[in-house]
Image (tube, rainbow, N blue to C red; front, side, top):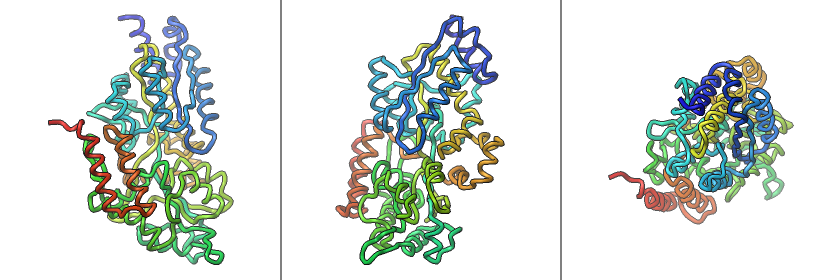
Length: 431
């Protein structure tokens, strides 16, 4: 056995058992340096938390130097990571969208992590709902970390002022429209507080996918080669979004900005928003009023897509770097750190045993809203993910925004999205 293979095996064994199981063996090779790209796209002290994890890790593993690089949005991070990897200039890992897995596999840039899971048990600890986007052709390519679902936040004071039960969120599409319409506040003809805001930019297709799921539709096939953008249920979902604007008149016309929703909610300018659970801690720390968090409403069923990012390990690593990456990933996703990350950010702790830690139990007991996204996982569907995913998702986004801006009707827009996506996916069809 080569020394590098011995190093890799020892580090992997140590990562799965005791934190300092193999320092002497690895030190014989010197310090191994790894770099990972991390997106900063949601409010909160993300960089300080990640920097803290990196510092703590290096104290425990002085023979591994880990450097986080903050690369902007998820799209920016993907572009930079792919460009650097193809140029053989790093990084060794990156936190990228879960839906980027097809792109990374098709480009042959990453390694399957079940191949590096020494005892074949670590990856099984993660929720199946979060492994869905990470699994392609029976292999697991990503480690769930910064994961989310969409949840509804409501202002209990505004509900109470409208004569609604402040402790009861709407459970159906109809209740959502009717109840949020009652919460609108006006000064003359000017609306000073809306009933509901659902972001129409940034992650347009993601918010829409929740409505399609609630109408009983999954927008993509399991193999990422086909989409059903213009199925009857998909049209119904988009019509519901439009109805909030035109029928119930509780939603602002046009496109509500991704970053505006949480701010409007915190400032009391809207009674309810649909947004990522990744904003939970930000809202908890900033809202000056009692608020609730709930699963999204049902139509034919409840439903929300999973979201957020996975860690991926790139191919252009030495065996020592791959071993170091796995050591870091097993360390940063232990139940205790997964719980800490969830409490600090609002993202969903991606493994069940994290919720059984005493710290997390105490946190949920005092702040039960934190468990809503976890409890919604049985109703979750994988986020829209296909081959050539960015262009397919953009084709859908363009048509959704055309509807929100009043330029097209739902059926025509989704027919056009289906045509565009089918053309993009044609090269990936098997004979």
